[in-house]
Amino acid sequence: MNLTIELTKRDFLERFSGSSLGFSWLLLAPLVNIFIYIVVFSELIGARIPGVESTLGYGVYLVAGLLPWVAFSNTISRISSIYVDKRHLVSKIKLDLRTFPLFVVMSETVVFMFSCIVFFAFLLYFDFELSRHLLWLPVIYLLQQLFAYGLGFLLAIFHVFLRDLKEFVSVCLQLWFWLTPIVYTFDILPDYAADVLRGNPAYLFVGAYHNIFVFDAAPEALSLLTLLGIGFSLILVGFFLCNKLERDMRDFL
Image (cartoon, rainbow, N blue to C red; front, side, top):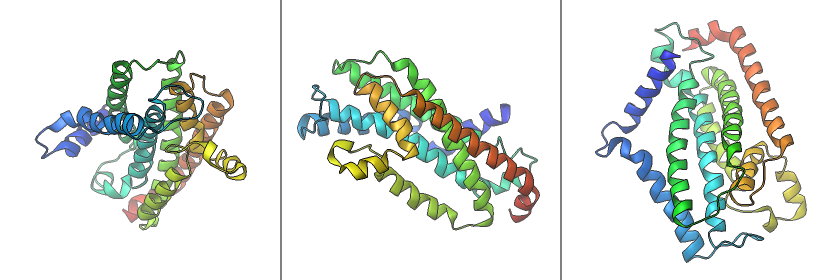
């Protein structure tokens, strides 16, 4: 655990090294982005969500989907290449390959928390009614990151042997983003397309955030249980492969 915390600290130092404003970007970056999403899209462009009376509805819908997606996709992307990117550590220090990627989860969680602080500040400033179901947020985020860690960890094992996988993951994440209802709603899709996209596992958590922030509804229990099952299944498969291939992985690195 101490190593994970130390790696998380180093990750932030590397992320903001050379920046004049340093850690201030943890607040400044989401401040600018959320301002654009909420004020520009909702107030100036006038985008609306069907069935939502508030003029801020679309901006809140957009941010409520984007913030968790960024944490989710960054976690997968960074973990999937972690053994190759950090091979100078993996090859020199006897690290537990299964727990080593956890610092990425912690790092992205800190960024997500600062973004949420800014998001809530905007909601309060514009007097947007907060949902009574907000207490579900830590549960959804935990399950979402369990999924991200499991998938990223599995991909990281294959990346050791297939070095082109990093580019493949990047392309797939971009495609996955557009197949997830973050910038659009199901209302604009044909019925057959909406039915297909509801099978998208990312919709399980994105839809839960939308329910809470925009529609004042609790997340669906089946969605949360499905996320839990997917996350644990991926981790179990990843641990099994890691135990079988660890020696080969270290040799390839």
